[in-house]
Every structure is written in C-alpha cells, then in structure tokens.
Image (cartoon, rainbow, N blue to C red; front, side):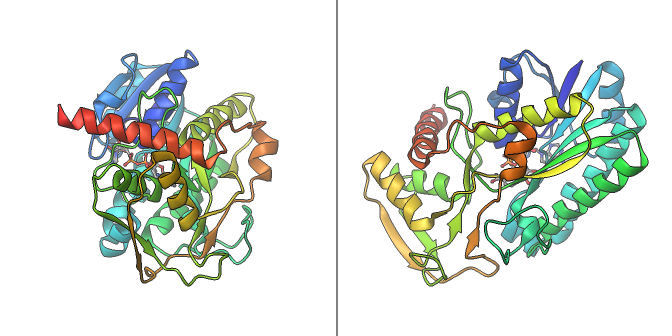
Length: 329
Ligand SMILES: NC(=O)c1ccc[n+]([C@@H]2O[C@H](COP(=O)([O-])OP(=O)(O)OC[C@H]3O[C@@H](n4cnc5c(N)ncnc54)[C@H](O)[C@@H]3O)[C@@H](O)[C@H]2O)c1
C-alpha cells in the first residue's frame, strides 16, 4: 500500500516525503515541478512528473499502484498573485483538486488529506481562532482553498471517502536533519526572507505596517515548524486508517509572534544586524492570526517538538546557507 503525495517536491511536501520514508511507507509523488525540485525528494520516492489535474495520469497511477491515501499539497500559494490572477488559483487550487478528488472516488481511494490554510478565516474576529469561526477569506487564494474544503465535505457525504483538512498557519523552518527546506525562488514568507537578509541575499527587510492593534504595532502570526506540520499529517493519516471520520483542524501552536519579534530572533540567531525598513500596511493583512489548536491536540495526540522560535529560525537559517552553496555550484 502506498501513499500518493501531490506537490511532494515542494517546500512542505518534500518534508512529508522524508517523514513518510523514515516511517517506512511506500511513497508515490506527482509533481509538475513548477515550484518544486526533484532533488528535494528521497530516492525511494516513485515520481510521476505531471499535472495533478490530469485524470488520465491519475488513473494510470492508481492502476499501477495500490494507493492507500492521497496527501494533497500541490497548488499555487502566493496571495497577492491570486488577487491579480484569480482564475489561475481557481484552476490550479480548486478545479484541479476537483479532478483529483474525482479520480480518487473513481479508483476507490478513500483517505485524503488536504493542505488548507488559515486564510479561510480572513481577518478573524476572535483570536486565537477556532475551526467554527466564520469563514471569510480576503483573497482568491483563501477562497480557492475554502471551495476545495466545501467539495471535500460534500464528496465525503456522498461517497466512501473520508478526508482531513488541515488549516495551516505560518509554516516555517526546515528539516532538522538538513535534507530539505524552503527553496522557492522569490518566496515571501517572513522567516525565509529575514534569513535571506541575514545572509546578504537581499539588501534589507521591510515591515509592512507598524500601527496595528498589537503589542508592538506589527502583525502577529502563529509560526509552525514544517517538521511538526508533516508529523501532524502522518498522525492524521493514521487516524483515517483507524476508520475515523472526516475532520477539519487548525495546524498551529496557538502562540503569536510579532514581525519585530521574528526579526529580533533572526538577528540573534544569525548574529547579523541587517537593515529593516518600516513600510505602510499591505491591503488585506490582518493584525493577528493565531490558531486555537485544542482540536488537533486532542484528535491526533500531536506532540509538537519544535515549538520554539529560535529553533525554527536556526533550522531555516541552516537551510538557507545550504541553499546558497547548492546554488553557487
Ligand atoms: N507555505 C505555507 O506557509 C502554507 C500555508 C498554508 C497552506 N499552504 C498550502 O500548502 C501546500 C504546499 O505549499 P508549499 O509552501 O509547500 O508550496 P510549494 O510551492 O513549495 O509546493 C507546491 C508544490 O506543488 C507543485 N505543483 C503546483 N501545481 C501543481 C500541479 N497543477 N500539478 C502538479 N504539481 C503541482 C509544485 O511544483 C510544488 O512542488 C499548498 O497547497 C499551500 O496552499 C502553505
């Protein structure tokens, strides 16, 4: 029995693949390498290069392999790009997820884990935000993910199909063993960008908004270590294997750090006092987005190992250094 990871060559997907390999699972990957890298994958992965919306290819994968479950990471993830080009997001995140879900139902693959996002909440009224909060995405990216959640819910009511949607908060850090990390070009994630500034890969770092209603005026976010996130997926898979029902869960630590706190942590861990510029708020940025995580702790018996900002930064920085060496070869 194999696990099919879509988008396995990407940032989060590649960590999932290494974790599944360590767990001794048979591993299949489908990726079009639009933002992912084949070198990020363990050698044991059987890789299908192609589009997650290609139903012929999916049918072939399901025919050639005994697939137990699908973990679906493939998608487009840049919020401002989704505002400029919403149809790209409704195609790649929503329509292609629909094709994948249909291929699963047709092939009788009944376990599905989906990468959702805290962006489905938009600007939450109550923080920490729980799973029952109103769903009011502020961008086509968030809406494209919410639409997939809605499809999954309807399909699980109609067919022999159970899913877990994990709503990730801010994913950060890298594999503690240094095998993979966030390698995306032009990434916008704060910790990665701050590490790039510390290593001189960019001239300065911008803080967008210093007048929010937060303790130091900058945005508050819940940073979850990517390895803890991958282990939450594996526990979610084990839960589905017990026959448990469909569920939606926040994936975060329930701790908020401000942009300034993150920058201070990167400066402290790297020992580099890089330039920081204060810039106006960006449209659509919420002051505080922090997870209520009681459901995932209870349902999965999840015991995060890296809920520690300096540790997250250390792993991200180590990866960024490795990436510089790789790119200079
Ligand atoms: N990074 C975060 O902080 C974050 C937060 C919330 C949710 N998510 C979700 O997690 C998932 C993974 O994000 P990531 O940060 O690893 O992004 P990423 O860009 O590193 O990975 C996406 C992977 O999917 C592949 N891909 C994209 N479209 C595809 C297609 N049509 N067919 C086949 N492969 C395709 C890419 O080549 C890449 O390997 C996404 O669905 C994203 O929306 C990420």
